[in-house]
Length: 397
Image (cartoon, rainbow, N blue to C red; front, side):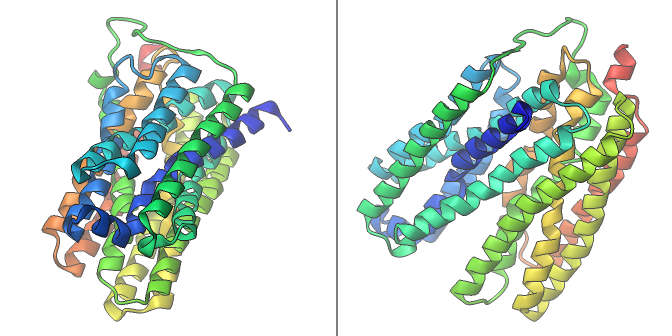
């Protein structure tokens, strides 16, 4: 196998091992409630902390924390997930658990630093490579859910919870060690190439950064919103969750491959960007259709239609591979590592806003679904606007 693609596959496995932390704790719900003597509302704080951590990770990306040695940065990011995973089942205080979950959210910084690596290894193949790596987020979600199920799930003893957490923490470091042996290091610049170049002052950064905001809004809230508004059996709920994870994983690869096929026709900066916009626009358009089916399924409490709607709506993740290959295509090579984190910070602001809006302020299914449909349309409009803008690499050339 081409060494570049073996690197992509091992990156994917590392991402999957790290994102196994995403849903695992909530799958031990009853065990956690009993052990800490907390309410279900308090249980929800740990996932909110995790999602806010995803946002803060990109905020820190503008500092020197995730710069310098690429391999050192990856090891640091994995440790932000692995060390709390070791500690969580031994924490005496629930608020200590919530704090550790916040730091686990930093695992998302892998996506930005891997974008730098993919930008160095590929040109037209970038969306496909990135799609495969991003799919690891959802394979990791499935792995975490199944590990929790193996340990006894919601009714597990606390010793079984500890065992599952320790196994997953050790696995992260095992995967990191294997990854370390096979991947080549390089330097992520710590300083800006020029004091006169600031990605935050470029209108393109802000407009395009928000093109992924609607997708993340949908990705991080639609599953929970749907489950809160239907009356399905436990097995049906489990199938729906698994369908969403598998759907987003597969769509990530499929739309990444489509981005590759479109990119290979024109590998100029403008040609690559045109392919990015095309893939993201198509993903949002199909997402709009899937959301209508989900709306109808919620209204009718129709399980079969919900499965179909969720499977189609999962294409919203098809925006990810294209979005995360924008920095190498649209910015000069000296500043695209910084641009990756800037675009990630802007788009991931959805993580800090969406959960509160959807679950605190939205009490009507109709209102919620209109917001979701509006998000898909907003994504398309922002993409059309960005396609008419000059790329930073064109402005600075």
